[in-house]
Amino acid sequence: MDEHETGARVGAELAEKYHQPSFLGDGHEGPHVAFVPEGLQVVDLKPYQDARLTRPERRKGTARLTTLASFIDHANRFRDDDSAIFANDAMPAPSLVAVLDYHARNDEDGEHGAPRFGEHRAIYAFPLSDEWTFWTQLMARQGWMSQADLAQVLEDHVVDVVEVSELFESTRALVEQLRISVVGSAELIRVARQLSIRVDAKVASAVNLSTGEGEISYEETHTDGKTGGKVTVPTGFVIGIPVARAGSRYPMICRLRYRVTGGVVTWKVLGHDVDRVFRDAFNGAVAEAGEATKLPVFYGSPES
Image 1: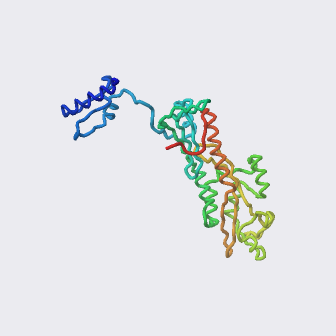
Image 2: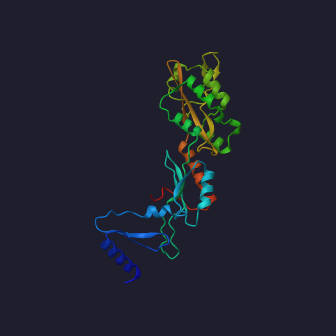
Image 3: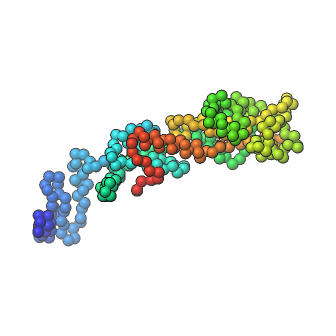
């Protein structure tokens, strides 16, 4: 019988003999086990032991970072060779999670690495910017806007509109491929504020839902009800907005649609390939985090 078995037997005998708890431990960090007589309450001693510790036994807890840079700095401060990053790209709550005490990996011979608690983490919730939230909600809006509402939107968010001369070459090429006639901020506001469009009866049915997209030539002219002159209605514009708060700006093509009902013009703004813009921004953040920390990145969620 070894010393641990002997100690356990003696402790149990003492507890029964004197009807008092008997403690077994090394005398340095306090007792580890308590033997209690039948009928007495069993008390967990661990909280009392922890209260006497001069420092925690291990790191644990979750830090919530509000910028990608802080997430990277935090991961680099506490990471080790087995830390890992998990990227959850599911909308509407994307996130990056660094599990700093992740399970050790298997070695080259297939030997299992040591399991770890996975309780020390950092989370970057990829907070969506106010600009992204506003424009995507506007694009998802079911109803049509009045001319006054469109003018107000463009006036309030004119700083997001990219001027035609400032478009990236790739964006310019895509606009041409989609055959969208884009304009800058000044022209957009002018259209929304000043044009009173009257569509001739022979054209009205063709443009009742929209202009553009090939069915109607971009040179299709409409009569300005105020001056009697002719104007061309633009079919789109480009905005440059950050997807994540404090993130880089990404160009997004917006289609501008209108319809005429009873001589009243209403408008709708539709985004082109919004999901791709989000994925580009999120994947860019993931790539930056992986490169800056040199940690493996897994798409999904860590073990709970």
